[in-house]
Image (cartoon, rainbow, N blue to C red):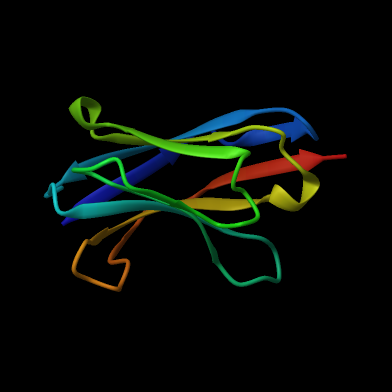
Length: 119
């Protein structure tokens, strides 16, 4: 089992920055991919960004590319999402997730952290 705990959410004004953290524990493996997703009220959960544990391979949703950066600290078993130039449409509950590289399914999820951006 893998446990994921997010932190760092909050309420900010448009244009501000926030950094989310995801601390992983349990049976984390180098073959994992870590990801961030978000879900706004009344909308489906959507992919935001991902990074491989063992390589610097990242992927971003088009809506956040150039504004958000996903990084990792393997020594701390922590993944970060640096969010700059925040917009009101970035308001959502942000979830950390993990999956094995060979799996198409995100098997592990955190409880989420709320990000609210006001105009």
